Length: 203
Figure 1 (cartoon, rainbow, N blue to C red):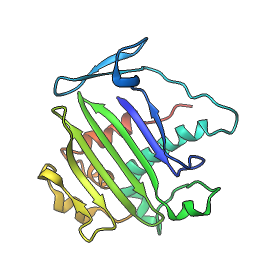
Figure 2 (figure 1 turned 120 degrees about the vertical axis):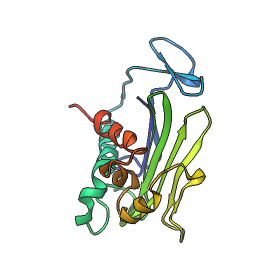
Figure 3 (figure 1 turned 60 degrees about the horizontal axis):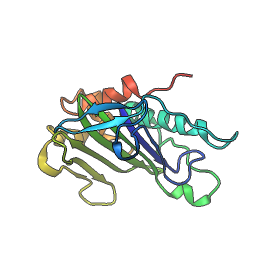
C-alpha cells in the first residue's frame, strides 16, 4: 500500500511535491481506513485521493513522475546499460535543473511493515539511494548510497545479505534495488515486486 510519494526536478515539477494518502496526523477521519503496522502501531489512510488544478498546471505530470520512478526501479539494471548516462526529464524552465538531481521517494506498507525507499538521479549516475524499514515501529537503515563518497555503498546494521555481490553487479547508472530485484534477492525482491505489481498507471 502506498502511503506517500515525493518528487522534485522531474518534468514540470521543480520543487519537491508530496502526494499523501495519510490523513493529517494519521488520525481516523471520514472514509479513511486504518492500516495496522508492525510494532503495534497503525495509520489512517484514504482509499482514494484526487488531484485538482487548472489546465497545464502539472496534474498529469505527478502521475507520470510515478511512472518514471517505477521504470527506473524495474529497468535501470537490465535496460539502461545501453545509455551513456541516465534517461530522465528534468524541469526544463530553469537551466540549473540539468545539473541538479531528480528526486523520488515513496513510503509503502508491505505485509504490515512500512518501508521508505528513494533515490536521486543525476545526468550520468545515481547520486544517492536509500532504504529504511520499520519492522518494529522504529526506523532501521538498510542502505545508504552516496556517489560523492569514496565508499559509495554503506549498509548500516549489516542487515542485507550478499552485499558484495550486489555492489559488484550494480552499475553507476543503475539502482541497486533494480539489481536486487532482477537477481531475485531474498530480502529486497518484495519491494522490487511491489513496484512491478502495484505502482502502475491505468489510463
